[in-house]
Image 1: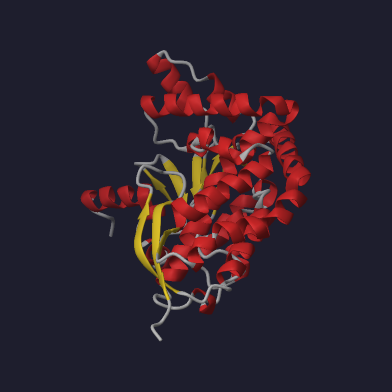
Image 2 (image 1 turned 180 degrees about the vertical axis):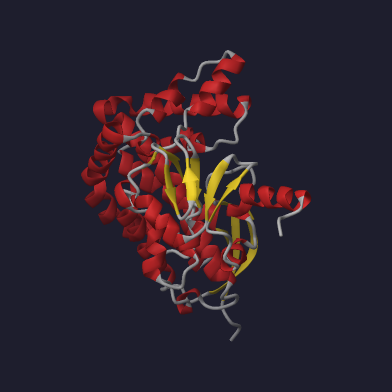
Length: 357
């Protein structure tokens, strides 16, 4: 029996905001259809981890045309977006074949150049930023701890002062397809600032901009949402008593979009050239197996280059929390509601206390 028109409308709306829905874990636990086409999003939706894994490896799957929305906006408004279009010509996930391999190589080299420096700095950075949890009665983990921490990590990775990151912190929003003219102009301005700041890096400027675009909100959302889930499911327990897993239990990257380079069929479904395919990688995160959760970093030739750095930061954060014996409980949790790309809290306020003696 098919869904009623009204049910389909609600279902489509939920797909658009599924990444931040309170019951998103239940959605995946219910085992939705492995792959289906959604008329509202105009793309295929993949919910099955096994199928997602096969699509990651499939040679006919490529990068999405992220520039198209801005090109359309440019034609309709008469306003140019040269910096945004430039960025999309250097972000590996938006490219294919030789261009993809070259851009990916440049990003990998940029990470390798700074990896040891970042890793050696993480213990001190994390300890300093999480210091308020040892003394304050209430802390906003996002505004007071994680946001400045991720700014510092990205600044080290890119090779700039942490204070400067705030000037183009919203650059990751360029991957959001739900944009209008006002936001497009804001993002164009921020990318222009980023390119100006990174311009003295010469040949490294474009891969460094890519690192900011793909790394900042991914880290912020993954760690923020993972800590929210762990504290919420252990209310009133000492932070030191929580069994922190080696892999985050939430992801700031709820889905990955791909585009079909050449038509093919899989599991009886025909995917035509140019079709968009949205792979819901949140499905990986909600596995009980840490090994399965690692697949949230993707696979195949487009796997996340920053996976190990992400795990290093998560390990340092959880090691720090394991030393804090104060009890914690959630006071307020809110997700960014204007964000259709990342799963990221706008606020995560916790109360901290010790038992009365």
